[in-house]
Amino acid sequence: MSIRVRMTVLAVTGLLVAGCTSGGDGVGSGSTTAAPSATGPTAPPTTDAKPSAAAPPPALPASLTGQRLGWKRCEAPSGGTRPGPEWRCTTVKVPLDHAKPEGATIPVALIRKKAGDERARIGSLLFNFGGPGASGVEILPQAAAEYAKLGERYDLVGFDPRGVGRSAGVVCRDDAEQAASEASLDLTPDTAAEEAAYLADNTAFGAGCARRSATVLPHTTTTATARDLDLVRQVLGDDELHYFGMSYGTQLGGTYAHLYPSRVGRLVFDAVVDPTADSTGHARHQTIGFQRALDNYLKSTGEAPKAGSERIARLLRKLDREPLAVGDRRLTEGLALTGIAVTLYGQANWPLLTQALQEAERGRGEALLALADAYNDRDAEGHYATQSHSQRAISCADSSERPTAAQAKALVPEFRGLSPVFGTFLAWDTAGWCANWPVKGERKTPEASAPGAAPILVVGTTGDPATPYEGAEKMAKELGDGVGVLVTNEGEGHGAYGTSPCVTRTVDAYFLDGKVPAYGMTCSSGTARSGA
Image (cartoon, rainbow, N blue to C red; front, side, top):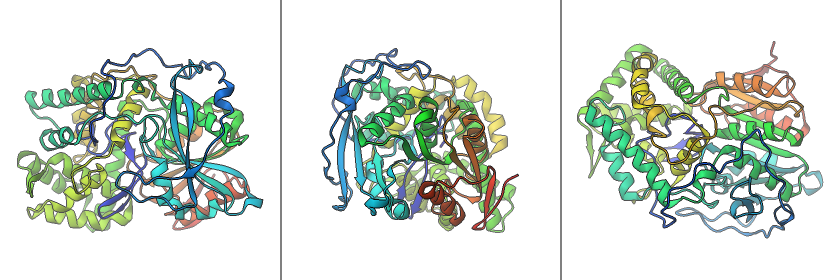
């Protein structure tokens, strides 16, 4: 769940994903999704081949900046539907290592739908749906109806960041390995044996990434992706970047603004990652955020939050001892926790949570397992997508922190006090996610200061479980005076655009007409009121 969380729109067994930072995604470090094995270099990756965010890399050669893009009809994603003929796809070559721009390159996959009104066209609008690890090439056509108004005056452009999907996507495990881990691993270990198995599984996951994706693994940092983004901007022919980042996409946007403040056009960050928090801080924020969302859900049902949380915690403890059989599978504590968490991403999902909890308390785990499978990208045939592989590769390349098991264990009492439902899992996840990761991380926290940049809208939702509202306040402050413009959405869910009419109107007016709202503007029940 932490910066490895996804912006989700849940429809029974389907999710539209996007992203968050250092703690666990889905059910966390021990339960990442997987895909079929891929062959690749077997040598472990090097760990010293990343340029610093503070040190500009050498200039890019004309062979990269002068690329001519060959747009063509898009192919269908694996297991998905081919985008309509209005969508076109291509790839941009970017340096594998921006410190060596004349060296090897990797592809970055793009998808585009041209502006409906060519005469009123503003430019390209690039999207990142979070994760990290969400495929913009797959998501944007599915979500395009939400951005139809913006698509009248912008070319809508999605991309797979490096290490994701069709952009040299990282692969770490096959389906059988993932299924075995998911079925057996205890994500809240209670004994020395469970602790050892938990850490061993996470170490094995990283080793699998090193075997299958050795070449790209050291180069999956957000800094490198931000540099790719600027090359994409240039190749698309835009003088400035216009960008809509959600969840983890706000971290990418903040990194871009820091690196290229003079090239900031119109940027919007929705469901904002706190750029000042380290891995433990993110886990703590999410423990508070998910419990806050759960409390709000329980209040909506008429149940006292304390009593309701303890009821759910009892169910989880029971599943820890005795998982529920669901056909030839089992609903474990970890999978149940994932099924609960995913419904908290949007208030429209709350009835699903009520149904799933009632069924589980009666001994039936089908509903919670289906919710967990949807979040973990597991299809009906038992095939797992690779978003969480990319998610962990990017997160662990970014963060230099590697909390130990002892440090995680020491957090358990505090985190459990913050949330009897999510606390123990998120405490342990601080150590599990990047345990013995084969690549060194770049830094402790990202840099987002962008002095001199044009105003950037920073939208925070008060009931956001995955990227709590406080992160938006921190991002607006870090971007700097006159740059970060805070917009508060009083509501529930991970992200506000498309669910809050007030936020949607405000963002559209900014993107289409350049209207910058007053700092601290608040949207409540669909209406706006000025900030202080």
